[in-house]
Length: 269
Length: 328
Image 1 (tube, rainbow over the protein chains, first blue to last red):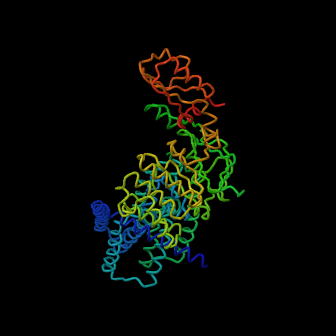
Image 2 (cartoon, each protein chain N blue to C red; image 1 turned 60 degrees about the vertical axis):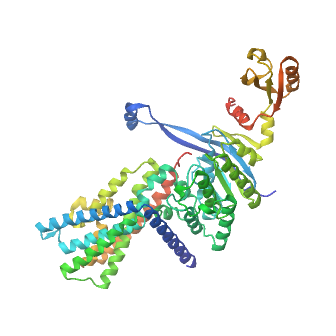
Image 3 (cartoon, rainbow over the protein chains, first blue to last red; image 1 turned 90 degrees about the vertical axis):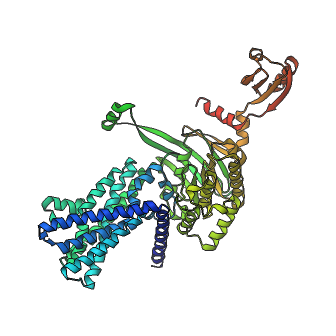
């Protein structure tokens, strides 16, 4: 137990150390940082404008009203923001460190290889996503006049955390192909397009497509479920299901990762 | 006799490589049907290294030196064979092992490019769980020795190659590793930095009693630092022993450098020895050790000699000879 606590402390310190360095590193190029902020904000605005246009024609989409859909969008933005603040940039750029061989150094460090692989790089301009996400939550409560209970908020947070695990595990599995092929920047386009799916409710899809997006390519439901805690339409069963699924997919991804590094061929020097 | 720090037995590594014909047609063909070959990078090598030894790893490009070091570091999985470093199997990547060794790859960097080197050192302090006082003490000592105190707060991308390599070395030594792998640590450095680096490595090996394997293209590095060398060629170990014996064994000749007072035709020098360099007024010959005395006196008697110098061949030539000899 004591060892566990000291381990958690160790990794937290390491995370904040890396976060600080990334912050300094990003600010070393101030112009680029500001441009990235603008780019993220533009992307979010376009997504929101499109949504409001759709809702100007129809009252609800697959049972989701406009304020409810805003909660889903907000959940999706916050989910992405946390991802960018933690693992996402590192996993996206995994093929680069595999290509140039700097993965060598990660492999020799006395820390969890998965940890140092996942938390090396963080993109801080995505702070914009949190700001917009929170603003959307507020706007949605303003529109509907319904403010969720403390209980709902707690469940939402648990949901977002579990969703993060699923999101991470799935992305990790896609990117571990880097170890086999060395070049997998193309996978990033796949990941980007799948991202676009998670801001719409699972209920939009039916039959096989829904099954596919839920279990085979588990990206759509990861925002839907947490958002449902805020709209009050979620069930405990859903949360349990998500928890079980998150646990399984994480173990699977971890196994795939550690098996794949055996194929790592390093880069010659 | 203490137990060896490093034991390598029958270590092999085979890569599978696909071959592609040149041109667009070749690329398209490559997409559908691939011919894959296996290349043997390291072929059943075995050796022992005692604690505190500083051993030079020699071999031409692609001989398998770096691949071997990477297997000893747990970066690559071997195809077969056993390795024990400090009692650990490297590719199991046990924390206890990783805590006790370090690798410096001359052509890669572990320092954060956009941040001062000090940041990378601080990160390693966290990663290796180095206590504050020990960290400050080691950092002070290393930055003093390598004379990089004043650049610690400069972003790494603005450092010169020499400064950067010194910082790379510091990053690798902060946790006081017991085993150190140095892969081309002096590559690309100017003569002054190269000498500094060399002195530092020698002193560090002596004072800290760190077991070091060094690969370098610069024979001077190896000559200055290593008593023992291991030579790898085409993935196979072809020599393991003292550097002196190597030179004695393979350098069966001496170099005769003769200057003349008046021009001498190349044809006149036939039968005197193997001509390495020729100029009408100066010639460098390789002559067998057994006959160099008679040949020297022949020169004095029959040629307008101004000066004769008798030299040992340099290590570069010895090594080149070994590598150009056909493999048995």
